[in-house]
Image (cartoon, rainbow, N blue to C red):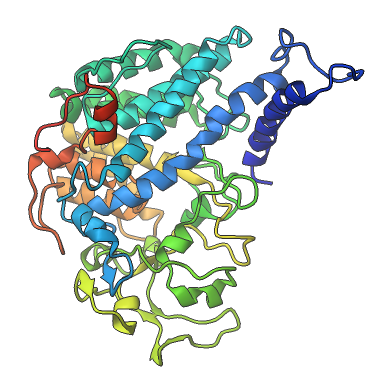
Length: 492
């Protein structure tokens, strides 16, 4: 059973208490109502109050999925009229997005962060929540959302409590300091039981956010913090709380909640908590016949030929891309208007005329196992936000930046060799960036990695060189309209 079910059920329990209290006829004799002042006194009731706050992580996938098109690992070409959408995906690919026209993309990510922060602040002020462990978990989750906002938008709002005042905008460095101090403060009170805290913040999730913060510190503040990044990675690795999966793809299986590698995941369930629909975004319409899907996929997301070709033969991870002839569930070849439905690595052009050539262009992602015979358009794979392989890769990069070449190769090769390819005998920054791309494709770290390595503004297939201003997304115009204290990022 997917571990989200527990959170989902508890969330429903909390809503049930509210609804029961609101609908009860006062003349009835009530046997199972809990007085308001008593609710939240045991762990099950406490979980009912805070469970939905962690359950909201499920929306992480949806908001990042579209914006990943700003990187060199994902593209949504126009196939006739399909995915035209006012040329939005072309603007995102070419870093020509518009703060007004594309407000929906950026406002979605912004509100994902701040709606969740607001909900967390409300519960932190709830006098029923007295557990220091629970408070620490909520503050760490709040720090995570601040980290996401700061990484993508730069100068954002620090929302560390409830207030009726119009919030001020803080500098990126100020938000960085807030996140760091929050996590360091709550670390001693966070749990270490990785099974009980699955899908929630624990001590190692806090170390992971700090490691990410320090790894990108030079981008965020102008001052590198490689030693601090390495130390946070050491804390996770030396705990032995996690281990690399023997099977790379088990981390992304339909039932991946038992992977020893996952540090933080957004729990999903096709029936109870939807939103994981990567198969709908990437597969061809007639892939419905391959997996017995109840609806035809949307034939959109694929990867660029150059990115696909960066994978060596023998690299297990190359199997994350679906190319070549496709078949029905019973083994018959599939055709598109008489043309064999065989996905091609090459995409002839970003904007293609309607027809089979356009519809089969581009390698599709099957990194997340496609769930056959699902009940609807959602799958039950939990979306992986942080995993142990990233800790080794980050520590290796930190060692590389500090001049420890042998240590860097040891960490990076530890991951690389488990994927079926020979380890590096020499190592460059380009090697590290490329290896991170192969290991973490479509896990939504690529934009951050490209920026850290100074490559986000480079030209690549279908994209000209872009300006440094594009390393930050625009503050959503919808938010500026609501809050005159927000100032737009330069270049917009």
